[in-house]
Image (tube, rainbow, N blue to C red; front, side):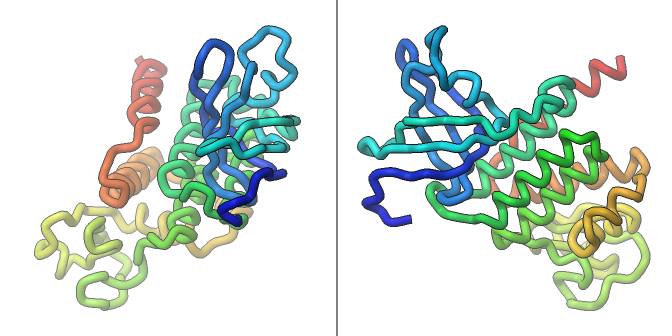
Amino acid sequence: MPALERSLKTEAVVIRHAEMGEADRLLTLFSRDAGIIRAVAKGVRRIHSKKAGHLEPFTRVSLMLARSHELWIVTQAVALDLYLPLHEDLILTGETAYVLELIDRFSYEEGENRNLYRLLIDTLERLSRGDPVFTAVHYFELHLLDQVGFRPQLFNCVRCKEEIQPQDQFFSAVQGGAVCPKCGHQVPDARPITMESLKYLRNFQRTTYPRLVQSVPSPLVEREVESILQYYNTFLLERRLNTPGFLNEVRKKREA
């Protein structure tokens, strides 16, 4: 997008908002045409604001924006999809927030990525219609990593380059993928990973989504895949994500 562009018509998903002044909100949006955008919705907290219901988190919205100094101003907003089921269950809300936090952390401000935007919309639709959360979220996660240049190597040992054999392996965030048993003890940050969990990670990379939905992982595989991906993301981002901690607390309360 040209640096001097003064107006923009686009479609976006609202990632989050924060109060600003007496009646405004500062929005973080992931847009189809300009990546991450920070925009001000003026007067949106007033009772009679026509924009208020169109700019809630998780909403897909059609926007008209005008440039004002360093921020965009929302001049028009029409909700295209509210994804209401995502707000009706706390786990589903947390998983959706995780997807959007990944988008926020791995995307660039005002850097167009239409493929990633399409992947996000597909994921929100899958979660809304009740697809298996584990499959929808981590399929998204592996394909996001691929699109932003951090695809983990899962088919050959990242150290010796030998093909991974059907047995338990290791995973190294520093090296960027799977490490064979022979090399695993020589890589300081390598963590054990079962072959079953590694198989699921591989399938997220190479198998079509409709086929993946038919498989049902064990609770152990779900926990291990989530743990490995959180470990990898923490290394890449040099910080922990916020939503996994929230999700863990919600799950503990449900199990109590």
